[in-house]
Length: 191
Image (cartoon, rainbow, N blue to C red; front, side, top):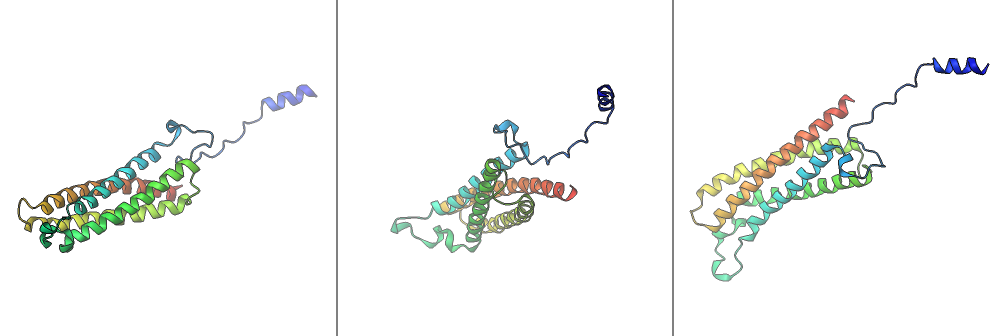
């Protein structure tokens, strides 16, 4: 009877395959960067670049504010130009959003996504990446005519050009983030 049992077990069908896990999840046992999904690492790097560029863009407008009394002319302050104030406000909001997303990416990598669930995170990232991108490109396009009206050699004009350039670069990075979050969002809907 033991021969019959052995021959029956040899001809049984193999165990059914387990479902494939999501490409965005990773094993608890894996702790190296090479074992992380590449989309998480790319997302982390892009979020960090967006954070740095948004901070640099906002800082370039604030840094030229004159501190001594003889240079406190209103034309040298960005607060007197509503277009530049709008650009500064959008860059501060973009910096805060990029800091939140960077914190969330680090928590997702370190703690396997218990900060916010993956589904809610995909919805938030998809919606707010689109919004941040729109605000950055609109603030850049609004500030360009204000810069063209300023006189050449003005330190505010030079700082505003640097700010707009960094803001546009931040827009490009957030647009890449929006493409990644759209990809993750579509993968979630399809699965």
